[in-house]
Amino acid sequence: MTVKYRINCSASERGWGREYWHEDFDTYEEARKRIYDINSKNTALTAPDYYEQAELRIEAVDTSIVAQRH
Image (cartoon, rainbow, N blue to C red; front, side, top):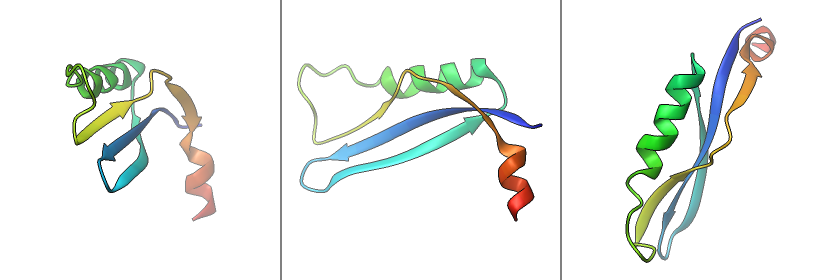
């Protein structure tokens, strides 16, 4: 079993909508740091034309299951 720690992210751009993606990390700490790195840039009092955001949830996923399907 290969476990990765997954975070879910989004980017929003005025007039273009929103894009979603996820990122996987080897450790919980790396995932937590990435969430902080993304969200720490969101300091404006109002939503800017473009911004990225990471959910605060970290999910443990078994990536060996996906690897076996290929």
